[in-house]
Image (tube, rainbow, N blue to C red):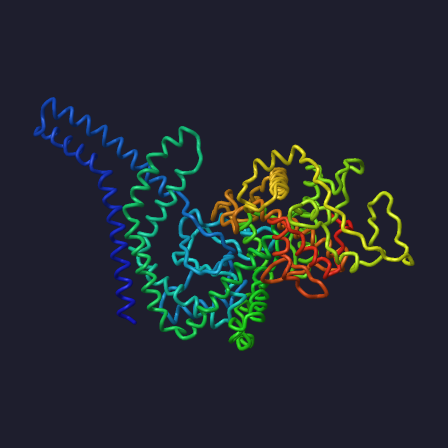
Length: 633
Protein backbone atom coordinates (compact mmCIF):
# COMPACT_ATOMS: atom_id res chain seq x y z
CA UNK A 1 0.00 0.00 0.00
CA UNK A 2 2.78 2.41 0.88
CA UNK A 3 4.42 2.02 -2.52
CA UNK A 4 1.14 2.74 -4.35
CA UNK A 5 0.36 5.76 -2.20
CA UNK A 6 3.85 7.17 -2.67
CA UNK A 7 3.73 6.58 -6.44
CA UNK A 8 0.39 8.37 -6.81
CA UNK A 9 1.45 11.27 -4.61
CA UNK A 10 4.75 11.61 -6.46
CA UNK A 11 2.96 11.69 -9.81
CA UNK A 12 0.60 14.36 -8.50
CA UNK A 13 3.51 16.46 -7.22
CA UNK A 14 5.37 16.23 -10.52
CA UNK A 15 2.28 17.42 -12.39
CA UNK A 16 1.78 20.20 -9.85
CA UNK A 17 5.35 21.36 -10.47
CA UNK A 18 4.61 21.38 -14.21
CA UNK A 19 1.66 23.68 -13.58
CA UNK A 20 3.80 25.95 -11.42
CA UNK A 21 6.47 26.06 -14.14
CA UNK A 22 3.86 27.38 -16.56
CA UNK A 23 3.06 30.09 -14.03
CA UNK A 24 6.76 30.91 -13.69
CA UNK A 25 7.17 31.11 -17.47
CA UNK A 26 4.23 33.49 -17.72
CA UNK A 27 5.84 35.67 -15.04
CA UNK A 28 9.17 35.54 -16.89
CA UNK A 29 7.53 36.65 -20.12
CA UNK A 30 5.94 39.58 -18.30
CA UNK A 31 9.29 40.62 -16.77
CA UNK A 32 11.36 40.13 -19.92
CA UNK A 33 10.78 43.63 -21.44
CA UNK A 34 11.57 45.22 -18.08
CA UNK A 35 14.80 43.22 -17.80
CA UNK A 36 15.88 44.25 -21.29
CA UNK A 37 15.08 47.88 -20.48
CA UNK A 38 17.16 47.68 -17.29
CA UNK A 39 20.11 46.28 -19.25
CA UNK A 40 19.87 49.07 -21.83
CA UNK A 41 19.65 51.74 -19.16
CA UNK A 42 22.60 50.25 -17.24
CA UNK A 43 24.66 50.13 -20.44
CA UNK A 44 23.92 53.76 -21.16
CA UNK A 45 24.80 54.90 -17.65
CA UNK A 46 28.16 53.10 -17.81
CA UNK A 47 29.00 54.48 -21.26
CA UNK A 48 29.01 51.14 -23.07
CA UNK A 49 25.79 51.39 -25.11
CA UNK A 50 25.96 54.87 -26.58
CA UNK A 51 24.53 56.40 -29.72
CA UNK A 52 21.18 57.45 -31.20
CA UNK A 53 20.19 53.85 -31.98
CA UNK A 54 20.72 52.75 -28.42
CA UNK A 55 18.85 55.77 -27.11
CA UNK A 56 15.88 54.91 -29.33
CA UNK A 57 16.03 51.28 -28.16
CA UNK A 58 16.03 52.43 -24.55
CA UNK A 59 12.89 54.53 -25.15
CA UNK A 60 11.08 51.72 -26.98
CA UNK A 61 11.93 49.05 -24.43
CA UNK A 62 11.14 51.37 -21.54
CA UNK A 63 7.66 52.11 -22.89
CA UNK A 64 7.10 48.43 -23.74
CA UNK A 65 8.23 47.40 -20.26
CA UNK A 66 5.79 49.82 -18.62
CA UNK A 67 2.90 48.65 -20.81
CA UNK A 68 3.63 44.95 -20.26
CA UNK A 69 4.07 45.41 -16.51
CA UNK A 70 0.77 47.29 -16.26
CA UNK A 71 -1.00 44.60 -18.29
CA UNK A 72 0.58 41.85 -16.20
CA UNK A 73 -0.40 43.64 -13.01
CA UNK A 74 -3.98 43.98 -14.23
CA UNK A 75 -4.13 40.28 -15.12
CA UNK A 76 -2.63 39.29 -11.79
CA UNK A 77 -5.12 41.53 -9.97
CA UNK A 78 -8.10 39.97 -11.79
CA UNK A 79 -6.84 36.45 -11.13
CA UNK A 80 -6.18 37.18 -7.46
CA UNK A 81 -9.48 38.93 -6.81
CA UNK A 82 -11.72 36.67 -8.89
CA UNK A 83 -13.91 34.47 -6.74
CA UNK A 84 -13.44 30.76 -7.53
CA UNK A 85 -16.59 28.75 -8.10
CA UNK A 86 -17.94 26.92 -5.07
CA UNK A 87 -20.62 24.26 -5.03
CA UNK A 88 -23.97 25.25 -3.45
CA UNK A 89 -24.20 23.45 -0.14
CA UNK A 90 -25.80 23.54 3.28
CA UNK A 91 -23.09 24.02 5.90
CA UNK A 92 -23.28 21.73 8.93
CA UNK A 93 -21.81 23.02 12.17
CA UNK A 94 -20.18 20.62 14.58
CA UNK A 95 -22.87 21.42 17.16
CA UNK A 96 -25.50 20.18 14.69
CA UNK A 97 -23.74 16.87 13.99
CA UNK A 98 -21.12 16.00 16.64
CA UNK A 99 -21.29 12.27 15.88
CA UNK A 100 -20.73 12.89 12.18
CA UNK A 101 -17.70 15.09 12.88
CA UNK A 102 -16.37 12.48 15.30
CA UNK A 103 -16.72 9.73 12.71
CA UNK A 104 -14.91 11.80 10.06
CA UNK A 105 -12.06 12.65 12.45
CA UNK A 106 -11.68 9.02 13.48
CA UNK A 107 -11.59 8.09 9.81
CA UNK A 108 -8.89 10.69 9.14
CA UNK A 109 -6.85 9.37 12.08
CA UNK A 110 -7.06 5.81 10.76
CA UNK A 111 -5.94 7.03 7.33
CA UNK A 112 -3.19 9.22 8.87
CA UNK A 113 -4.33 12.33 6.97
CA UNK A 114 -5.50 15.79 8.12
CA UNK A 115 -9.18 15.98 9.01
CA UNK A 116 -11.45 18.17 6.84
CA UNK A 117 -12.00 21.65 8.20
CA UNK A 118 -15.80 21.47 7.93
CA UNK A 119 -18.67 19.38 6.60
CA UNK A 120 -21.40 20.47 4.20
CA UNK A 121 -24.29 18.71 2.48
CA UNK A 122 -25.33 18.92 -1.14
CA UNK A 123 -28.56 17.63 -2.75
CA UNK A 124 -26.72 15.18 -4.98
CA UNK A 125 -25.47 11.59 -4.87
CA UNK A 126 -21.76 12.38 -4.71
CA UNK A 127 -19.09 13.36 -2.21
CA UNK A 128 -15.89 15.35 -2.64
CA UNK A 129 -13.39 17.71 -1.03
CA UNK A 130 -13.65 21.41 -1.81
CA UNK A 131 -11.08 24.09 -1.13
CA UNK A 132 -12.63 27.22 0.37
CA UNK A 133 -9.49 29.00 1.49
CA UNK A 134 -10.01 31.97 -0.82
CA UNK A 135 -10.67 35.15 1.23
CA UNK A 136 -13.96 35.74 -0.58
CA UNK A 137 -15.30 32.43 0.72
CA UNK A 138 -15.16 33.52 4.33
CA UNK A 139 -18.46 34.93 5.62
CA UNK A 140 -18.48 38.49 6.92
CA UNK A 141 -17.89 38.82 10.64
CA UNK A 142 -20.77 38.80 13.13
CA UNK A 143 -23.16 37.28 10.67
CA UNK A 144 -25.15 34.19 11.54
CA UNK A 145 -26.91 33.45 8.27
CA UNK A 146 -27.89 30.24 6.64
CA UNK A 147 -27.44 29.24 3.03
CA UNK A 148 -31.16 28.54 2.90
CA UNK A 149 -34.00 30.85 3.87
CA UNK A 150 -36.83 29.60 6.02
CA UNK A 151 -34.66 27.21 8.03
CA UNK A 152 -33.21 28.22 11.34
CA UNK A 153 -29.45 28.66 11.64
CA UNK A 154 -27.33 25.56 11.32
CA UNK A 155 -23.92 27.22 11.59
CA UNK A 156 -22.61 29.80 14.05
CA UNK A 157 -20.82 32.86 12.84
CA UNK A 158 -17.22 32.24 11.81
CA UNK A 159 -14.27 34.57 11.75
CA UNK A 160 -12.77 35.95 8.58
CA UNK A 161 -9.86 33.52 8.72
CA UNK A 162 -10.38 30.34 6.77
CA UNK A 163 -8.88 26.94 7.54
CA UNK A 164 -6.27 25.41 5.28
CA UNK A 165 -7.88 21.95 5.13
CA UNK A 166 -10.62 21.46 2.51
CA UNK A 167 -14.31 21.10 3.27
CA UNK A 168 -15.91 17.66 3.05
CA UNK A 169 -19.08 17.82 0.92
CA UNK A 170 -21.42 14.85 1.36
CA UNK A 171 -24.45 14.00 -0.76
CA UNK A 172 -27.48 14.30 1.49
CA UNK A 173 -29.24 11.18 0.08
CA UNK A 174 -26.31 9.11 1.38
CA UNK A 175 -27.00 10.16 4.97
CA UNK A 176 -30.62 9.02 4.84
CA UNK A 177 -30.27 5.84 2.81
CA UNK A 178 -26.93 4.41 3.95
CA UNK A 179 -26.04 2.83 7.24
CA UNK A 180 -23.24 4.33 9.36
CA UNK A 181 -20.73 1.67 8.32
CA UNK A 182 -21.58 2.09 4.64
CA UNK A 183 -21.19 5.86 4.84
CA UNK A 184 -17.79 5.51 6.52
CA UNK A 185 -16.65 3.12 3.80
CA UNK A 186 -17.82 5.45 1.02
CA UNK A 187 -16.18 8.49 2.60
CA UNK A 188 -12.83 6.77 3.22
CA UNK A 189 -11.27 7.47 -0.22
CA UNK A 190 -12.69 11.02 -0.14
CA UNK A 191 -11.24 11.86 3.27
CA UNK A 192 -7.94 10.25 2.24
CA UNK A 193 -7.61 12.98 -0.38
CA UNK A 194 -6.79 15.55 2.31
CA UNK A 195 -3.29 14.06 2.55
CA UNK A 196 -2.07 14.91 -0.97
CA UNK A 197 -4.09 18.13 -0.89
CA UNK A 198 -2.01 19.38 2.02
CA UNK A 199 1.20 19.31 -0.02
CA UNK A 200 2.30 22.94 -0.74
CA UNK A 201 3.01 22.36 -4.43
CA UNK A 202 -0.34 20.68 -5.10
CA UNK A 203 -2.20 23.35 -3.12
CA UNK A 204 -0.42 26.16 -5.02
CA UNK A 205 -1.13 24.54 -8.39
CA UNK A 206 -4.81 24.16 -7.53
CA UNK A 207 -5.06 27.78 -6.43
CA UNK A 208 -3.46 28.91 -9.69
CA UNK A 209 -5.84 26.85 -11.85
CA UNK A 210 -8.91 27.94 -9.87
CA UNK A 211 -7.84 31.55 -10.13
CA UNK A 212 -7.50 31.30 -13.91
CA UNK A 213 -10.91 29.64 -14.15
CA UNK A 214 -12.49 32.36 -12.02
CA UNK A 215 -10.79 35.06 -14.14
CA UNK A 216 -12.28 33.54 -17.30
CA UNK A 217 -15.71 33.65 -15.66
CA UNK A 218 -15.22 37.31 -14.70
CA UNK A 219 -14.23 38.31 -18.22
CA UNK A 220 -17.16 36.39 -19.70
CA UNK A 221 -19.77 38.16 -17.57
CA UNK A 222 -21.92 40.76 -19.39
CA UNK A 223 -20.53 44.24 -18.87
CA UNK A 224 -20.37 47.62 -20.56
CA UNK A 225 -18.44 48.11 -23.80
CA UNK A 226 -15.46 49.79 -22.08
CA UNK A 227 -14.99 47.05 -19.48
CA UNK A 228 -15.64 44.37 -22.07
CA UNK A 229 -12.85 45.65 -24.31
CA UNK A 230 -10.43 45.99 -21.38
CA UNK A 231 -11.20 42.54 -20.01
CA UNK A 232 -11.02 40.89 -23.44
CA UNK A 233 -7.22 40.79 -23.26
CA UNK A 234 -7.30 39.47 -19.70
CA UNK A 235 -9.66 36.70 -20.77
CA UNK A 236 -7.45 35.78 -23.73
CA UNK A 237 -4.38 35.42 -21.51
CA UNK A 238 -6.29 33.46 -18.86
CA UNK A 239 -7.65 31.04 -21.48
CA UNK A 240 -4.19 30.61 -22.98
CA UNK A 241 -2.72 29.72 -19.59
CA UNK A 242 -5.62 27.36 -18.84
CA UNK A 243 -5.09 25.51 -22.12
CA UNK A 244 -1.39 25.23 -21.35
CA UNK A 245 -1.86 23.64 -17.93
CA UNK A 246 -5.08 21.71 -18.56
CA UNK A 247 -3.40 18.39 -19.19
CA UNK A 248 -1.03 18.70 -16.24
CA UNK A 249 -3.88 19.69 -13.91
CA UNK A 250 -5.97 16.70 -14.99
CA UNK A 251 -3.10 14.30 -14.45
CA UNK A 252 -2.41 15.91 -11.07
CA UNK A 253 -5.98 15.24 -9.94
CA UNK A 254 -5.75 11.66 -11.18
CA UNK A 255 -2.60 11.17 -9.16
CA UNK A 256 -4.28 12.60 -6.06
CA UNK A 257 -7.29 10.31 -6.54
CA UNK A 258 -5.07 7.27 -7.08
CA UNK A 259 -3.08 8.00 -3.94
CA UNK A 260 -6.26 8.52 -1.91
CA UNK A 261 -7.87 5.32 -3.21
CA UNK A 262 -4.72 3.33 -2.46
CA UNK A 263 -4.54 4.70 1.07
CA UNK A 264 -8.25 4.03 1.73
CA UNK A 265 -7.92 0.31 0.97
CA UNK A 266 -6.81 -0.26 4.53
CA UNK A 267 -10.18 0.92 5.89
CA UNK A 268 -13.38 -1.14 5.44
CA UNK A 269 -12.37 -2.38 2.01
CA UNK A 270 -14.86 -5.26 1.96
CA UNK A 271 -17.70 -3.08 3.21
CA UNK A 272 -16.87 -0.45 0.60
CA UNK A 273 -17.65 -2.90 -2.20
CA UNK A 274 -21.12 -3.45 -0.75
CA UNK A 275 -21.56 0.27 -0.12
CA UNK A 276 -20.85 1.09 -3.75
CA UNK A 277 -23.94 -0.90 -4.70
CA UNK A 278 -25.97 1.31 -2.38
CA UNK A 279 -24.47 4.38 -4.06
CA UNK A 280 -25.90 3.33 -7.41
CA UNK A 281 -29.23 2.47 -5.83
CA UNK A 282 -29.40 5.82 -4.04
CA UNK A 283 -28.60 7.66 -7.28
CA UNK A 284 -31.41 5.85 -9.13
CA UNK A 285 -33.89 6.58 -6.35
CA UNK A 286 -32.85 10.23 -6.06
CA UNK A 287 -33.14 10.83 -9.80
CA UNK A 288 -36.56 9.18 -9.89
CA UNK A 289 -37.76 11.15 -6.89
CA UNK A 290 -36.69 14.49 -8.36
CA UNK A 291 -38.08 13.97 -11.87
CA UNK A 292 -41.31 12.11 -11.03
CA UNK A 293 -42.28 13.42 -7.58
CA UNK A 294 -40.55 16.71 -6.78
CA UNK A 295 -40.78 18.35 -10.21
CA UNK A 296 -44.63 18.32 -10.38
CA UNK A 297 -44.73 19.88 -6.91
CA UNK A 298 -42.21 22.58 -7.85
CA UNK A 299 -44.27 23.47 -10.91
CA UNK A 300 -47.29 23.93 -8.63
CA UNK A 301 -45.42 26.32 -6.33
CA UNK A 302 -44.84 23.74 -3.59
CA UNK A 303 -41.52 22.25 -2.53
CA UNK A 304 -41.43 18.93 -0.66
CA UNK A 305 -39.67 19.59 2.62
CA UNK A 306 -38.44 16.02 3.19
CA UNK A 307 -36.78 14.96 -0.04
CA UNK A 308 -34.09 12.91 1.66
CA UNK A 309 -36.67 10.99 3.65
CA UNK A 310 -38.53 10.49 0.39
CA UNK A 311 -35.49 8.70 -1.04
CA UNK A 312 -35.82 6.07 1.67
CA UNK A 313 -39.52 5.63 0.89
CA UNK A 314 -38.83 5.40 -2.85
CA UNK A 315 -36.09 2.80 -2.46
CA UNK A 316 -38.22 0.87 0.01
CA UNK A 317 -40.98 0.75 -2.58
CA UNK A 318 -38.45 -0.35 -5.19
CA UNK A 319 -37.29 -3.19 -2.96
CA UNK A 320 -40.91 -4.27 -2.53
CA UNK A 321 -41.48 -4.43 -6.29
CA UNK A 322 -38.08 -5.67 -7.40
CA UNK A 323 -36.82 -8.92 -5.92
CA UNK A 324 -33.25 -8.17 -7.03
CA UNK A 325 -33.23 -4.80 -5.26
CA UNK A 326 -34.75 -6.40 -2.16
CA UNK A 327 -31.78 -8.70 -1.58
CA UNK A 328 -30.15 -7.73 1.68
CA UNK A 329 -32.70 -4.97 2.35
CA UNK A 330 -34.21 -6.58 5.43
CA UNK A 331 -30.79 -7.13 7.04
CA UNK A 332 -29.86 -3.48 6.54
CA UNK A 333 -32.92 -2.28 8.47
CA UNK A 334 -31.41 -3.48 11.74
CA UNK A 335 -28.33 -1.29 11.35
CA UNK A 336 -28.07 2.33 12.43
CA UNK A 337 -28.92 4.80 9.63
CA UNK A 338 -26.38 7.51 8.94
CA UNK A 339 -28.93 10.29 9.48
CA UNK A 340 -28.80 9.42 13.20
CA UNK A 341 -25.41 11.14 13.19
CA UNK A 342 -27.29 14.45 12.91
CA UNK A 343 -28.85 16.14 15.90
CA UNK A 344 -31.85 17.48 13.95
CA UNK A 345 -32.17 15.54 10.70
CA UNK A 346 -35.58 17.04 9.90
CA UNK A 347 -34.25 20.60 9.93
CA UNK A 348 -31.28 19.71 7.76
CA UNK A 349 -33.50 17.73 5.39
CA UNK A 350 -35.67 20.81 4.98
CA UNK A 351 -32.63 22.94 4.19
CA UNK A 352 -31.29 20.58 1.54
CA UNK A 353 -34.78 20.16 0.07
CA UNK A 354 -35.13 23.90 -0.47
CA UNK A 355 -31.63 24.04 -1.94
CA UNK A 356 -32.57 21.23 -4.35
CA UNK A 357 -35.64 23.19 -5.44
CA UNK A 358 -33.46 26.22 -6.13
CA UNK A 359 -30.80 24.32 -8.06
CA UNK A 360 -33.00 22.04 -10.14
CA UNK A 361 -36.05 24.26 -10.63
CA UNK A 362 -35.00 27.83 -9.87
CA UNK A 363 -37.43 28.41 -7.02
CA UNK A 364 -37.34 31.48 -4.77
CA UNK A 365 -34.93 31.76 -1.89
CA UNK A 366 -37.64 32.15 0.74
CA UNK A 367 -41.07 30.70 1.36
CA UNK A 368 -44.27 32.56 0.58
CA UNK A 369 -47.89 32.10 -0.49
CA UNK A 370 -46.78 30.97 -3.96
CA UNK A 371 -43.79 28.95 -2.75
CA UNK A 372 -44.63 26.93 0.35
CA UNK A 373 -43.31 23.67 1.78
CA UNK A 374 -45.48 20.57 1.57
CA UNK A 375 -45.30 17.43 3.67
CA UNK A 376 -45.56 14.02 2.09
CA UNK A 377 -48.90 13.25 3.72
CA UNK A 378 -50.32 16.45 2.19
CA UNK A 379 -48.85 15.80 -1.27
CA UNK A 380 -51.95 14.13 -2.84
CA UNK A 381 -54.28 17.00 -1.94
CA UNK A 382 -51.86 19.92 -2.17
CA UNK A 383 -50.07 18.84 -5.34
CA UNK A 384 -51.75 16.02 -7.22
CA UNK A 385 -55.34 17.23 -6.95
CA UNK A 386 -54.42 20.87 -7.63
CA UNK A 387 -52.20 19.91 -10.56
CA UNK A 388 -54.87 17.84 -12.27
CA UNK A 389 -57.61 20.42 -11.80
CA UNK A 390 -55.36 23.28 -12.87
CA UNK A 391 -54.38 21.40 -16.04
CA UNK A 392 -58.02 20.52 -16.73
CA UNK A 393 -59.03 24.16 -16.33
CA UNK A 394 -56.27 25.25 -18.71
CA UNK A 395 -57.37 22.64 -21.24
CA UNK A 396 -60.97 23.87 -21.26
CA UNK A 397 -59.81 27.48 -21.34
CA UNK A 398 -57.89 26.77 -24.52
CA UNK A 399 -60.89 24.95 -25.98
CA UNK A 400 -63.04 27.99 -25.23
CA UNK A 401 -60.49 30.23 -26.90
CA UNK A 402 -60.51 28.06 -29.98
CA UNK A 403 -64.31 28.12 -30.08
CA UNK A 404 -64.74 24.37 -29.68
CA UNK A 405 -68.34 23.13 -29.22
CA UNK A 406 -69.67 19.63 -28.70
CA UNK A 407 -72.49 20.46 -31.15
CA UNK A 408 -72.15 22.32 -34.43
CA UNK A 409 -74.81 24.83 -33.36
CA UNK A 410 -73.01 27.97 -32.12
CA UNK A 411 -76.01 29.16 -30.15
CA UNK A 412 -75.70 30.02 -26.43
CA UNK A 413 -74.51 28.95 -23.97
CA UNK A 414 -71.21 30.41 -25.14
CA UNK A 415 -69.04 27.86 -23.27
CA UNK A 416 -69.67 24.16 -22.96
CA UNK A 417 -69.52 22.69 -19.45
CA UNK A 418 -66.13 21.26 -18.48
CA UNK A 419 -66.72 17.61 -19.29
CA UNK A 420 -64.38 14.86 -20.38
CA UNK A 421 -66.74 14.04 -23.24
CA UNK A 422 -66.08 17.47 -24.72
CA UNK A 423 -62.36 16.77 -24.87
CA UNK A 424 -62.73 13.22 -26.18
CA UNK A 425 -65.20 14.24 -28.90
CA UNK A 426 -62.96 17.07 -30.01
CA UNK A 427 -59.84 14.89 -30.29
CA UNK A 428 -61.66 12.00 -31.96
CA UNK A 429 -60.75 11.52 -35.59
CA UNK A 430 -63.99 10.92 -37.59
CA UNK A 431 -62.16 8.42 -39.80
CA UNK A 432 -61.38 6.10 -36.86
CA UNK A 433 -64.95 4.91 -36.43
CA UNK A 434 -67.88 5.41 -34.07
CA UNK A 435 -68.18 8.24 -31.63
CA UNK A 436 -69.61 6.22 -28.76
CA UNK A 437 -69.26 2.75 -27.34
CA UNK A 438 -72.17 0.35 -27.72
CA UNK A 439 -71.87 -0.72 -24.07
CA UNK A 440 -72.43 2.76 -22.68
CA UNK A 441 -76.21 2.59 -22.28
CA UNK A 442 -76.17 -0.91 -20.76
CA UNK A 443 -73.53 -0.05 -18.13
CA UNK A 444 -74.92 3.33 -17.12
CA UNK A 445 -78.58 2.26 -16.80
CA UNK A 446 -81.88 3.83 -17.71
CA UNK A 447 -81.52 7.06 -15.79
CA UNK A 448 -78.29 7.83 -17.60
CA UNK A 449 -79.87 7.65 -21.03
CA UNK A 450 -80.89 11.30 -20.70
CA UNK A 451 -78.47 13.93 -21.82
CA UNK A 452 -78.62 16.57 -19.06
CA UNK A 453 -77.54 19.26 -21.52
CA UNK A 454 -80.05 18.45 -24.24
CA UNK A 455 -82.76 21.18 -24.49
CA UNK A 456 -85.71 18.75 -24.75
CA UNK A 457 -84.43 15.90 -22.64
CA UNK A 458 -87.14 13.90 -20.87
CA UNK A 459 -86.73 10.96 -18.51
CA UNK A 460 -87.03 7.53 -20.02
CA UNK A 461 -90.13 5.62 -19.03
CA UNK A 462 -89.03 2.40 -17.33
CA UNK A 463 -92.28 0.62 -18.31
CA UNK A 464 -91.84 1.42 -21.97
CA UNK A 465 -90.44 -1.38 -24.09
CA UNK A 466 -86.87 -1.02 -25.07
CA UNK A 467 -86.27 -0.03 -28.65
CA UNK A 468 -83.07 -0.76 -30.47
CA UNK A 469 -81.87 2.14 -32.56
CA UNK A 470 -78.91 2.44 -34.78
CA UNK A 471 -76.17 4.61 -33.37
CA UNK A 472 -76.34 8.18 -34.52
CA UNK A 473 -73.87 9.04 -37.22
CA UNK A 474 -70.98 11.27 -36.32
CA UNK A 475 -72.02 14.88 -37.04
CA UNK A 476 -69.97 16.76 -39.52
CA UNK A 477 -67.19 18.64 -37.89
CA UNK A 478 -67.74 22.39 -37.85
CA UNK A 479 -65.38 24.50 -39.90
CA UNK A 480 -62.12 25.21 -38.14
CA UNK A 481 -62.01 28.62 -36.48
CA UNK A 482 -59.25 31.01 -37.36
CA UNK A 483 -57.12 30.23 -34.25
CA UNK A 484 -56.87 26.62 -35.46
CA UNK A 485 -55.21 27.57 -38.70
CA UNK A 486 -52.68 29.90 -37.13
CA UNK A 487 -51.74 27.54 -34.28
CA UNK A 488 -51.59 24.44 -36.45
CA UNK A 489 -49.33 26.28 -38.88
CA UNK A 490 -46.92 27.24 -36.10
CA UNK A 491 -46.91 23.78 -34.52
CA UNK A 492 -44.32 21.16 -35.45
CA UNK A 493 -46.01 18.58 -37.66
CA UNK A 494 -43.69 15.81 -36.48
CA UNK A 495 -44.40 16.46 -32.81
CA UNK A 496 -47.61 14.41 -32.80
CA UNK A 497 -46.44 11.94 -35.40
CA UNK A 498 -47.66 11.45 -38.92
CA UNK A 499 -51.06 10.26 -37.70
CA UNK A 500 -51.72 13.24 -35.43
CA UNK A 501 -54.91 15.07 -36.31
CA UNK A 502 -55.04 18.83 -36.98
CA UNK A 503 -57.23 19.21 -33.91
CA UNK A 504 -54.59 17.62 -31.69
CA UNK A 505 -51.82 19.73 -33.21
CA UNK A 506 -53.79 22.95 -32.80
CA UNK A 507 -54.79 22.11 -29.23
CA UNK A 508 -51.18 21.26 -28.34
CA UNK A 509 -50.04 24.58 -29.80
CA UNK A 510 -52.73 26.40 -27.83
CA UNK A 511 -51.63 24.78 -24.58
CA UNK A 512 -48.01 25.65 -25.30
CA UNK A 513 -48.95 29.30 -25.91
CA UNK A 514 -51.13 29.41 -22.79
CA UNK A 515 -48.33 28.05 -20.62
CA UNK A 516 -45.90 30.55 -22.12
CA UNK A 517 -48.27 33.39 -21.24
CA UNK A 518 -48.62 32.12 -17.67
CA UNK A 519 -44.86 31.86 -17.24
CA UNK A 520 -44.37 35.34 -18.68
CA UNK A 521 -46.90 36.73 -16.20
CA UNK A 522 -45.05 35.15 -13.26
CA UNK A 523 -42.97 37.77 -11.41
CA UNK A 524 -39.21 37.24 -11.61
CA UNK A 525 -37.49 35.45 -8.76
CA UNK A 526 -35.66 37.89 -6.54
CA UNK A 527 -32.32 37.18 -4.95
CA UNK A 528 -32.12 36.26 -1.32
CA UNK A 529 -31.97 39.20 1.10
CA UNK A 530 -28.72 39.90 2.86
CA UNK A 531 -28.15 37.43 5.65
CA UNK A 532 -30.78 35.06 4.32
CA UNK A 533 -30.96 32.44 1.61
CA UNK A 534 -27.89 31.22 -0.24
CA UNK A 535 -24.70 33.05 0.64
CA UNK A 536 -23.84 35.05 -2.48
CA UNK A 537 -20.24 35.13 -1.29
CA UNK A 538 -20.09 31.40 -1.95
CA UNK A 539 -22.02 30.93 -5.19
CA UNK A 540 -23.91 33.02 -7.70
CA UNK A 541 -27.67 32.39 -7.79
CA UNK A 542 -28.48 34.72 -10.69
CA UNK A 543 -28.60 31.94 -13.30
CA UNK A 544 -31.06 29.54 -11.68
CA UNK A 545 -31.84 26.77 -12.24
CA UNK A 546 -28.23 25.64 -12.44
CA UNK A 547 -29.16 22.04 -13.27
CA UNK A 548 -32.54 21.77 -15.04
CA UNK A 549 -33.95 18.29 -14.60
CA UNK A 550 -35.77 17.97 -17.92
CA UNK A 551 -35.95 19.84 -21.23
CA UNK A 552 -39.12 21.84 -21.94
CA UNK A 553 -42.08 19.60 -22.63
CA UNK A 554 -43.16 19.22 -26.23
CA UNK A 555 -46.67 19.99 -27.42
CA UNK A 556 -47.47 16.28 -27.57
CA UNK A 557 -46.38 15.77 -23.97
CA UNK A 558 -48.34 18.79 -22.81
CA UNK A 559 -51.51 17.61 -24.53
CA UNK A 560 -51.15 14.09 -23.15
CA UNK A 561 -50.58 15.45 -19.62
CA UNK A 562 -53.63 17.69 -19.81
CA UNK A 563 -55.91 15.00 -21.19
CA UNK A 564 -54.68 12.63 -18.47
CA UNK A 565 -55.45 15.28 -15.86
CA UNK A 566 -58.96 15.67 -17.29
CA UNK A 567 -59.52 11.91 -17.12
CA UNK A 568 -58.33 11.82 -13.51
CA UNK A 569 -60.63 14.71 -12.56
CA UNK A 570 -63.59 12.87 -14.09
CA UNK A 571 -62.63 9.72 -12.20
CA UNK A 572 -62.42 11.59 -8.89
CA UNK A 573 -65.70 13.47 -9.34
CA UNK A 574 -67.84 10.69 -10.83
CA UNK A 575 -66.33 7.37 -9.73
CA UNK A 576 -64.94 8.11 -6.26
CA UNK A 577 -61.28 7.80 -7.27
CA UNK A 578 -58.63 9.51 -5.17
CA UNK A 579 -55.35 11.29 -5.93
CA UNK A 580 -52.31 9.44 -4.69
CA UNK A 581 -48.53 9.49 -4.55
CA UNK A 582 -46.41 6.75 -6.03
CA UNK A 583 -42.82 7.03 -4.83
CA UNK A 584 -41.44 5.82 -8.16
CA UNK A 585 -43.94 7.27 -10.65
CA UNK A 586 -45.17 10.44 -8.94
CA UNK A 587 -48.84 11.52 -9.06
CA UNK A 588 -51.11 8.55 -9.53
CA UNK A 589 -54.83 7.77 -9.59
CA UNK A 590 -56.21 5.40 -6.97
CA UNK A 591 -59.36 3.44 -7.79
CA UNK A 592 -60.66 1.32 -4.92
CA UNK A 593 -57.31 1.83 -3.24
CA UNK A 594 -55.37 0.38 -6.17
CA UNK A 595 -52.95 2.32 -8.37
CA UNK A 596 -54.07 2.76 -11.98
CA UNK A 597 -51.22 1.85 -14.31
CA UNK A 598 -52.85 1.39 -17.72
CA UNK A 599 -54.13 4.89 -18.46
CA UNK A 600 -51.16 6.35 -20.36
CA UNK A 601 -51.35 4.18 -23.53
CA UNK A 602 -55.09 4.82 -23.85
CA UNK A 603 -54.59 8.57 -23.65
CA UNK A 604 -51.82 8.40 -26.23
CA UNK A 605 -54.11 6.46 -28.55
CA UNK A 606 -56.58 9.34 -28.40
CA UNK A 607 -54.00 12.11 -28.66
CA UNK A 608 -51.82 10.63 -31.39
CA UNK A 609 -54.25 8.53 -33.42
CA UNK A 610 -57.59 10.15 -32.65
CA UNK A 611 -58.93 6.74 -31.55
CA UNK A 612 -61.14 7.03 -28.44
CA UNK A 613 -62.16 3.37 -28.25
CA UNK A 614 -59.49 2.18 -25.75
CA UNK A 615 -60.10 5.12 -23.44
CA UNK A 616 -63.89 4.84 -23.61
CA UNK A 617 -63.76 1.13 -22.84
CA UNK A 618 -61.52 1.89 -19.86
CA UNK A 619 -63.94 4.58 -18.62
CA UNK A 620 -66.88 2.19 -18.84
CA UNK A 621 -65.05 -0.57 -16.99
CA UNK A 622 -64.31 1.78 -14.08
CA UNK A 623 -67.73 3.45 -14.11
CA UNK A 624 -66.42 6.92 -14.97
CA UNK A 625 -69.00 9.33 -16.38
CA UNK A 626 -67.41 11.44 -19.13
CA UNK A 627 -70.57 13.52 -19.73
CA UNK A 628 -70.65 14.86 -16.17
CA UNK A 629 -69.05 18.26 -15.46
CA UNK A 630 -65.96 18.22 -13.27
CA UNK A 631 -64.80 20.66 -10.63
CA UNK A 632 -61.97 22.91 -11.78
CA UNK A 633 -59.61 25.18 -9.90
